[in-house]
Length: 365
Image 1 (cartoon, rainbow, N blue to C red):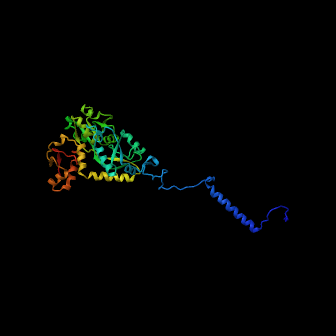
Image 2 (image 1 turned 30 degrees about the vertical axis):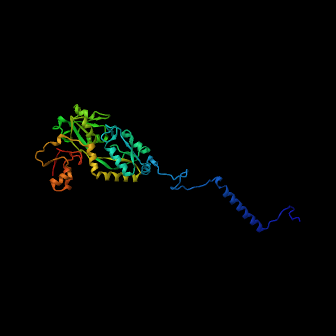
Image 3 (image 1 turned 30 degrees about the horizontal axis):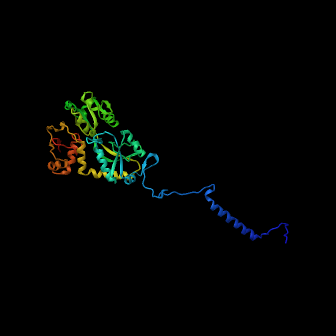
């Protein structure tokens, strides 16, 4: 039967049109879901920190570089690998050197082993570089820490510092024939002063010796030789290096210790707070042991005949074999805890409270 419009087909009522509209929406929705990944607006995902690597194995701890070139996650990497990579200067006795048995040795080298053990590492790997290049290696992630006679320096970017592992001061060194003329820095006003080319030493001399005429040396030698040749009246030098190098220059002698107070510390990549904490714990524990004193005596001892002479008009004590400051305080002052009083009186006569030696004459309270 023909409809009134003159065309063939089915005529939809109002409810039928509505039903067809709903079916159309459903088809479009299904198509959109099926081809959602190829639509122009793409797919949004949210990343999480507990992801799994694409190989199917869990992602292990790794050292990454954070903003600003800082290493991150260093302690985790050290514990996973069992190796602590330590940046050191080559041939820098007594801190790091090759001994007569062709083995690595030195105060810093031995202490690095103690620190590594405290961190849970099984061994250390020494990475050698020039002093001024070590911070760059640390920032790049080529090493985990620096141990190379660094005094904490806030101007070195992206490096933070541990507690001190060695307290020391500058020493004053003169020709053995001039010990009665140049007894202390008070005698050096306007005199010729040799220093290793170090900004800290240069600054100290300028601030504490009026009108000093400074000669700066670098390279492998020259500073002790200047005193021996009478080209300088005195050498101002870091004690740890002076203690070692003076052995090759017997015509020179130390006449004053601890001109200032400083400390060597471990350089650590900034942001690694867990590593700083563990390094500090390892250093502080070891410093409280007799083994730390033995390590100092092995690598940092020196003697000066200037301080074995009698002192008129003062109460003194002459050190005997086996003495310590606490033992002397106990026998001479009836209180071992008064050893610090003895140390304070003798800071310019001995390098460190752990480095007294037989025949040394100590001033007593």
